[in-house]
Amino acid sequence: MRARLERDFDRFKRGLPRDFPAHVRETYGIDLTARYLGELVPHPIGKGSGQLSLNLGQLDDDAAAGLAFAVLKTVIAEDATGAQAMAAWAIHETKMKVERRRAGADREGWTVTWKGRGWDRPFGEYLALLRAGRDLTRAGRLLVVPSVKYHLPRLAEPFREDEYRHTTGLLADAWGDPPLLLEKDFSPTLAGDALADDRAQILRWLREVPGRIRAASPIPVRVAMKLMNARFDDRFQVEMMDTCTGADTLVVFNRLFDAELGVAFGGWDLSDRNLRVLETVQESPGLRPGSVVRLTPHASAGIPALTGTGNIGSGRMILEYARRGCESVQLHTFFQLPLSEYAATHGTRPERALHALVFHPQEGLIAGMLELEARRELERHDGELRFLDLPAHAHRAG
Ligand SMILES: Cc1cc2nc3c(=O)[nH]c(=O)nc-3n(C[C@H](O)[C@H](O)[C@H](O)COP(=O)(O)O)c2cc1C
View: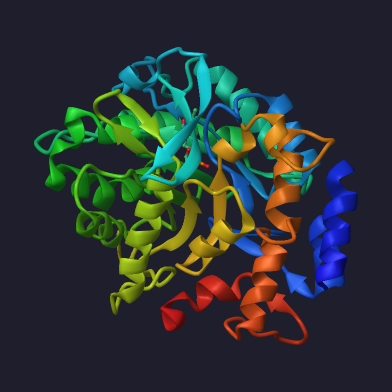
């Protein structure tokens, strides 16, 4: 197997096989099937919302590379008059800087420094992109999901329901057949904003927003809440997860906020924090991801299914998230590195990234799963190692 993996890594530098998950299954007996927002996907690697999912060209490249899913850039909700309560997030900024970021004395990671926020073009253009994404999804080429920043009120204020209704209605119309899948973003700049100074206020958003979106949608909807890294301790981070029972999935967790520089950042500090919080959840009896029980249309208990994000640049890091309960992962920074950072010599960045994430003979997903098997931490069923066994057993293992 090792020798075969070395050979595959080498020959796929020029391009991945058209259906690489099928190749992995036949060659290594590894089933990479994963899950995102309740949908089975052929492997766990998707693209997170951001500057890399702004246009159809990017989505086409993602489909051709074989990404499992892509989340569109976050659009700012608006009402029928075009008013946006979160207009401060719809600012225009193009310049991004991919730079090294050090964590502690010895770990160099990558971060993207950028001062922009949400979608800054007309809402109609977002709907056109969503319709193109819907066509890719229907064709079985790439699961595409929109992302929205809806109004978040202060504690004493009501939610602006007209914004929820108008925006969700337009997205549902553009999508067509139910269910509508969508992410609600709680961004690092929100975490750094005065709006997020108050814990009770944040917890109210998490308790109420999924229900508001469901109530606003003319068709059945599955909601992923992309939680921010709040400026409070790890325990509050767990409390946020435990409060957000109305969601179908939690994306854990968006980037950190550097208050001094006024920018979001990633790198090792981000994955350290995310993995540490997920471990706390793992060790807490009664907090099992994917255990949500819907008691009534508006009340549920348990923790929703998890999707990981943050400093994922190797198959091994995907496994760290999976072993703490994540059924899939979404990346941004690793799709943006200088070409010299990828071992592959041909292909788009998503293709080169997949090559490293899956086939790297030491750091890749296949190598990592074979190693877990050798350590008897993952067993074959009907001759196959299954990626989804990792999140399913996260609690027993923990
Ligand atoms: C330049 C940039 C823009 C982003 N914009 C959004 C966004 O609009 N909505 C969102 O939910 N996440 C956004 N993200 C967060 C990413 O989707 C991802 O969750 C985060 O960067 C952590 O993953 P990474 O370490 O692989 O970059 C953005 C990230 C970057 C670097």
